[in-house]
Amino acid sequence: MKLTESRCPKTELGFTIKMMRIWVLIFFIKTKPSNPVLRDRIHALWNPECYHGWNKSKKFFEGWYYKIISADQKHALAIIPGIAMDEDGTKQAFIQVLDGRNLKASYHKFDAQDFKPNPKKHDLEILGNRFTSDSIELDLPNLKGSLRFKNLNPWSSSWSSPGIMGPFSFVPFMECYHGILSMDHNIEGSLEHNGEIISFDQGKGYMEKDWGHSFPEGYVWMQSNHFSKPGISVKASIAKIPWLGSSFIGHIAGVLIDGELIEFTTYNGTRLKHCSISEKQVCLQMENKHYALSINATREKATALAAPISGFMDARIEESMNAHIQVQLTDKKTGKIILEDIGSSAGIEVAGNHELLLK
Image (cartoon, rainbow, N blue to C red; front, side, top):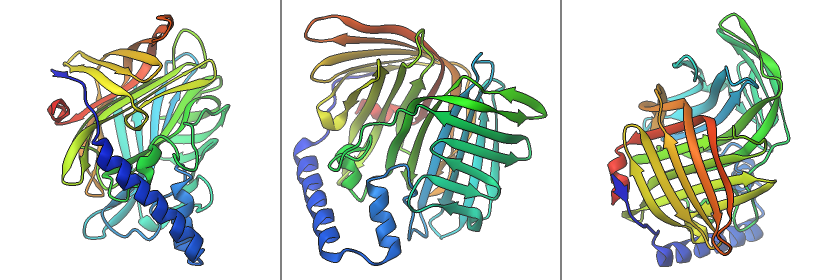
């Protein structure tokens, strides 16, 4: 299957986002909101790592994704805490754990009252389990211990473009919002997993999050920060995005290399030149003004995870943490290949009706 060049509706997008920016600015200046819930929601708008569900009571989810890989890559876990609310207002907190090497997943359900986010920073507690930007503390039946994260590399952020969503952050009707908390960081500490003490000292981690009401109807996502040299990380995703009664194919990719994050996004003029999907591979090609990015991902056996639909975790997706991503990054002006490498311990999801991406 192939997807040819795709763009978002720039005229409609630009006008809508400009109006939303103006509305948010005027509202904030005029009202100087004294309502603490409103203040927290505005604070979260420019701080994607924080909780966004203040004053939400139904059809909403929010989850944080911690990918942790041991130094020898023998152990790969994804830990996903979050909150889910269905269309009727039924709520539950959860912590989902994916054991990437053993192809197993567990879903731990909690009362919504046990979900306690900090409104000012990324600091979440769920009944004895704590999750922050630089640490996690776990007290689950089969997973206990604490880890610390150092040298984080978050996605770039500014007043007009807060995080990876960029100007889409200001659009109030998006199906799903996304945040990159760290493209790559170092891990210290150990966990007891199923009775085995596992050291994650000198391991590598990656952090992101999602919030909204549903995952896209069809999407592809992949990430690796295990290349031949440290400090390299690649993340890419393509999804069908509902938009004002229609839809477009949105795309986001980032390459962290030599301390610089090279961004490929729908809103910065990046063009998706090619996408092919088979049972064995996913191939992507993107170009922004200065760089061309080519990715060939080899798919491996995946494990089923719970995913949100209309706020609740009733959908199912499959994720592999054993894939490989072959990456080539080229400077368009000079023709010089800046990066040509293969990333291991790669996470990859091909979810939903991905044929929708062909439209």
